[in-house]
Image (cartoon, rainbow, N blue to C red; front, side, top):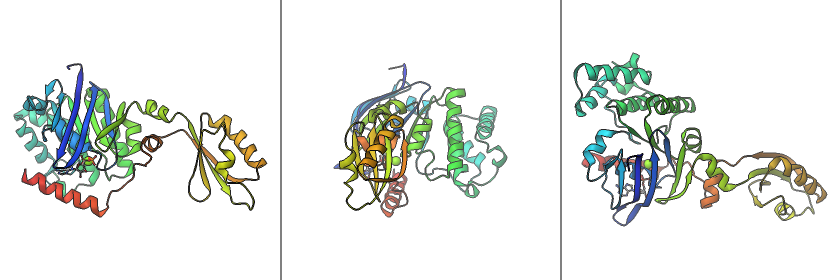
Length: 336
Ligand SMILES: Nc1ncnc2c1ncn2[C@@H]1O[C@H](COP(=O)(O)OP(=O)(O)O)[C@@H](O)[C@H]1O
Ligand SMILES: [Mg+2]
């Protein structure tokens, strides 16, 4: 087990009749950024909570940094840093004080603690703000402080649950940069969850796609995109009286699949868009179809999810249901 930073074998978590995690198995190598990509409710947070020893699995085993998550939970806790999905800073304290309390909990003190706090605050570029109350921090600053705090005791494995949830694009890119530097300069192994396709794509060396508590695919972003195995061409076809249905007209090689979208758009799956486009345009013209727009793209992870599940990973943030879920979870957490 020791060549891997994380090994999970058939992890299951049930909450009453709800199966949040339905038996996941995967391995994370030391020094890599491994991601769990999936929609809301897929079981990502529950998996992190089990690996971080906050929740006991209903079934299955897992080892983190070589230690069993149930039988050696203290050793696991010493080896990991965690940034939770929900904010967990004390906003009535300064950045420095938040760090200091965390260090004390981990048995750090004196010069060592002071030095490490400063080092980590510099790493996330918050040193200048160390004596400000966290309640005056922006969302991005809070997230950076949480990352710094999670790194204080030099964990081997860092868990990040939706690290850039709700942040603006510039701040997100900034946080990605810190995460890459941790891997490249600090040799920290990173396990992160996200429902953002671009984050998985940009950041993860390898990832597992999770849906309804199960891993439905695993690999590097490129390997996963090869599952879709083709380019996608988008055509906007103008309605012309007497012209055939575009998908009926064009569903023959080199087109492997045609899907009607909204407002006269169709999506065509082909193996090589640059070769297929002239052939398709000629055919369309000969059948009386007026093509107003052509574009194509390499498949994205969104196309992979669509291909595997028939659905898109949708943004459901800010919905009332989600907000309620958040409130309920915070209350539960406080009661624990
Ligand atoms: N403490 C809990 N009690 C009951 N159900 C829960 C609890 N935590 C999570 N769930 C449910 O388990 C499923 C997975 O949730 P979660 O792990 O938070 O998913 P994700 O992080 O991928 O959005 C959801 O259906 C969620 O409502
Ligand atoms: Mg979550």
